[in-house]
Image: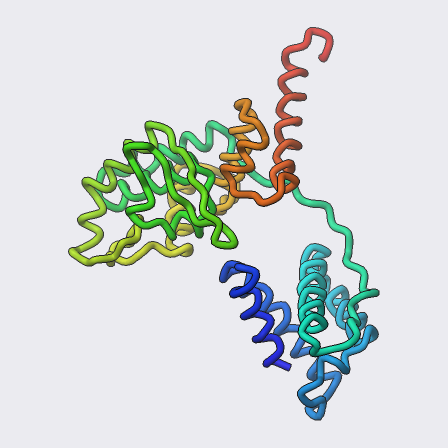
Length: 303
């Protein structure tokens, strides 16, 4: 059974251009299903085991997740993974019937993205400078300023090489999902902070190594996602930000603040690298709430 799963994962990477993180999510979901079915089909299922999986098998699998109090969003994601996998098996001629056709996906509302207030964001951006001007703090300031100036995903941020940032034109070349390249502008202040990092901090962190990554750890290696998350959590804590913070919250904050500042939705979509504008539209709910708050405060008859 695992051989077919591996072929599907390779298809996601080579043909669909899925990121390693997305591929890993599919691998985990399908691995859980394979383990479950192994107990149902038995060791003698053979190479055509996936063709022997019935709708009842999958219905029982879904019921088992609900019995363990899986969140509706988690169940929906795992069902979607199974449906995609069986669509692949059908296309490849590995199975003739798709047992997922009548498996319903739970309806879940899209949660509104969390974001930082303007005040919390200002405190976060200022925190590395407050701690001093050593190479790590200069790097951290450049990291936070650049991600908030561009709205890049964290994976995109840490994948930057020095040559991807043009400080003269104040543009960043970013490689997004599906290997789609986009150019993102950055404002003057962010460019100056990044210039300061490249001039005064990166050479110390590089330790004479030839690493081309834009942002480095203290060993001279490219910064990892986990490293960035730790940096972010430490500065948020020291800045007194009470809200639980994740790297993606900075991207949400960028989008929300841009729309509240009057940026057109299409422009924000392009900056974020969303393939579909419906993905960007979730932020309009946040800006609508903001408009209502301002209306209530400003209109003489609203209180």
